[in-house]
Image (cartoon, rainbow, N blue to C red; front, side, top):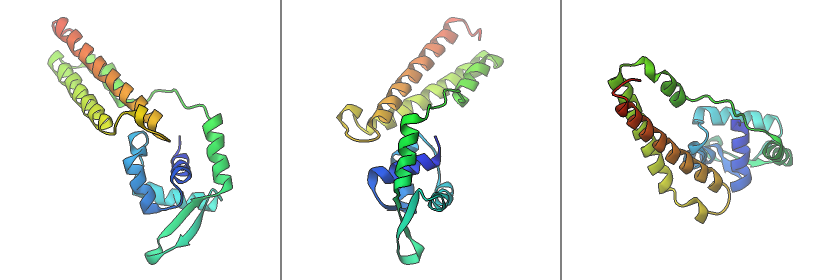
Length: 172
């Protein structure tokens, strides 16, 4: 997925918005599944406008631009949603640390696993505060459900791995 698709999705779902508004919407919604900062969003908006995917609908005080998605932008978003096969190639710092944990002393490996578990528990709490995905309507609810399930699974994995390490007498 690219930042471009994420921005097209936000504009499609919520209507015209400024770069500032899109950054704030990103922080409260898509940031749970895709990371992008202010410094990435504004240049991408300029490229998208140059490519005809969005237009500047209005320009306000201090050069504030209000962007809207174009028909070409809607087509690009639709093509990506129905035709793009998401990459299943894993790239996870968590998995890399889990893979390399046996290189550590047992007590260090245990500390790493416990830190991971705490991180997963914190993530689960954050996502659960967003509410029950089944009670939500519109975009975002399936991603929230996926995130909650993944976080629960990760907590379970960490719990089991910690128990395994303790049961093995520290043999990693």
